[in-house]
Image (cartoon, rainbow, N blue to C red; front, top):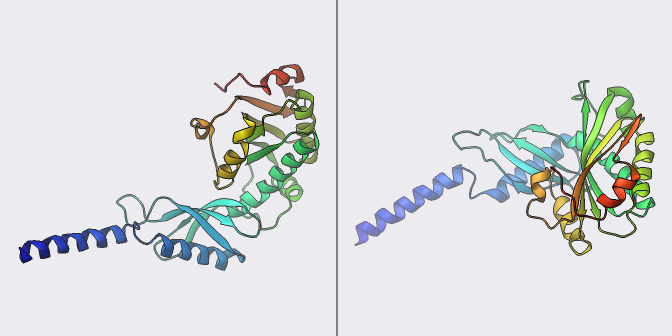
Length: 247
């Protein structure tokens, strides 16, 4: 009996060792290494929100993490090697895009719309040399992005109108030097809005499938370019009050 128990204990220890090597039992240690490496790279304080792929598996030689910059609340993704080196991250680009998100959110609020955005930028120029702290207008002037697009969640309200949404986007469009601006818009029930925004705020990115298990009223695509706004204000009035979903 003792021999059997010893064999079982040995097997358990081996399994535990393998799991440890695969990153399944040392999340706290791994998170602290990532946070330290990012502080050494950028200064400031960082907090790992979630860990994804682990090094030590058959297909990965890095650990991936969702990270929040404590001072700015910017959430981004990072990959760290087994040696504790940050292989890649999108912290700087996210800090630039956060300026656009705050601008758009503020312009919507000025029109009486409660909303939160998550945006991406597209440029033909090499943006790898963008420096931390670069202002949005300087980034646009230097790197000539041709499109900003992303996701916009709007809190349900009878005050949401086509003219208000168009005015907010038009003001933002003007402020970003007439760069095309597009968004997948999701209308969220008033009682669920805060919960969805809180969850969204902990993620570096989302896509339309993220909304599959969320209670939403409607969704649609909205864009503003130099010579066009789509849909028009009358159509937006209907869309903003629910009943239509993105294809």
